[in-house]
Image 1 (spheres, rainbow, N blue to C red):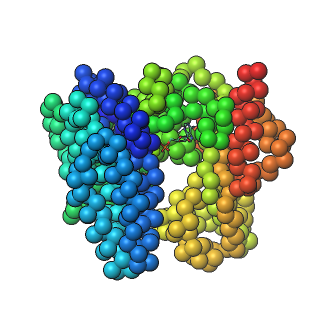
Image 2: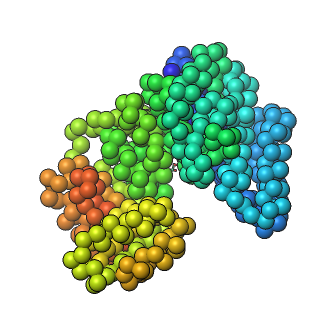
Image 3: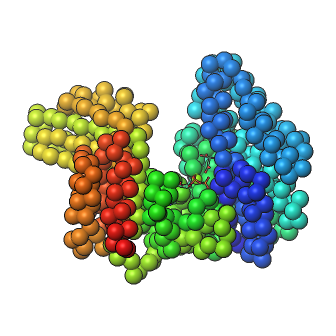
Length: 444
Ligand code: ADP
Ligand code: ASP
Ligand code: MG
């Protein structure tokens, strides 16, 4: 069996949906299970509608227009998704009535993007002669915890998915399953976090023992940098699970950071391919990666990072200083990425602001706290970093030439990455300068 996941741009445009149908048809001998995202922009539109509903305005007109536009391009009737669109309308009205977009209602609203998408794609496939059926992931075993907005599967999910999805794949119709969403044991709809359809696909793939997990997107594989920032970025033919995990974690949107975990657990290769260029081999991610690789491999970046500094001369030489700080972060579910310490201070980066203020109030009892926001974290992935003395001097030389100051630095934690924080306005320039230094100039 073969899991094939198609992202938002692959299901959000008629020409691309036609490619999708051809790609799935060609894979029929492999018994494909298709996982799809919401059409591009639809999740953003749904979240905006949820926020507007909290202010009392129920407005789903743009979403309905986007969805029916896609259906009509394939001569499919609006009735195909009438139930979903009316469910969405009711959910928005419930938010408006309570004047609050609770996390649970927001997830319910967001879920309709994928729920509409499976029905559209299954019908488009069937109309193109590839019989297919639509399934909401929670009906085929995607049971999650109740951490709305960033839910994770519970232990029984793998067995349920294995049993139910395998049974569907054995039929003569291609199952098309929603990415991104699940349900709690007591039946409330959840989402796995933005970009989470990749993770859904990996969970399904691991459960059914897919021979490969295919992620079809709008770029030809995992590239040396985000091609939207670096026009010269190139495809990396083979990556290790470790390299891909670091890249995804530090901002390469092409893969959701959790995608790798189920694949590693079951030793299943993940392949990233371009729906608009199906013949391109893309990137294959395996446990061995590219054994011959040397030097820099890729540069990832993440915007909107906050750096928190805690200074406490009272804590000079005291043990337990770090433990107290991290205990506060842990209780407030704030994820810390990079850490640098001196004798009396700790600096760390966090990438979400939502629970930060409450944590900061508690940290003020430990020391003087300052926060600088809107920073960019840049991460260079390189093979054999600890043995290769040339990578770091080149990083600093490239940033120095551009007069870009480094505000925080971390290296050594994984032997394959150097991470640094620069001012938000310098972020893209830093990535471009590093890409020139580490890839282009060496090649020329
Ligand atoms: P999908 O909707 O298919 O899931 P995403 O928008 O989530 O697609 O991810 C694909 C995008 O990821 C690309 O269009 C690209 O701009 C961005 N991206 C960021 N870093 C990288 C990278 N290193 N390699 C490839 N794409 C990247
Ligand atoms: N539709 C969801 C999002 O936009 C999930 C995904 O695309 O992977 O975040
Ligand atoms: Mg994505």
